[in-house]
View 1 (spheres, rainbow, N blue to C red):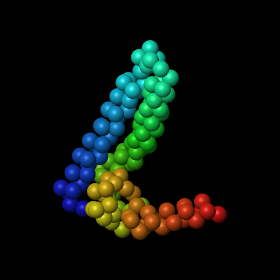
View 2: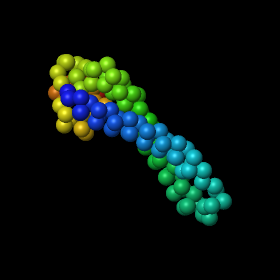
View 3: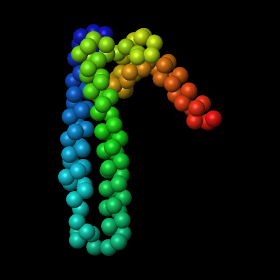
View 4: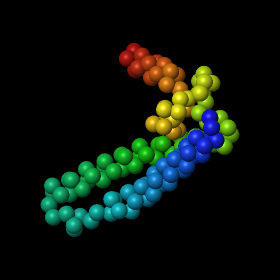
Length: 122
């Protein structure tokens, strides 16, 4: 992979990590501090609780990506970024554009998903 591409992915990953951490702090401080006094009826209270629940779920999903981003940044520093962990082939740039923390090429990821589907159905 070209050095220019590595720098671009590194910058994207660092920005994504920063956004997730900032979003996490924002969710914890703003969204979760709704006072019951601000909600005049049960419908408003239920709506606020639902919103809070959705925000927490989204936040958890984003935070689950953080270790993957950290691993991708380590791989960049070690010169192993963009190499499939399963087969050793290059992970395509188009895949990395969509999922910059991907560790498997498309072929290996599809095989993994197929195995998971078979295991879940049995």
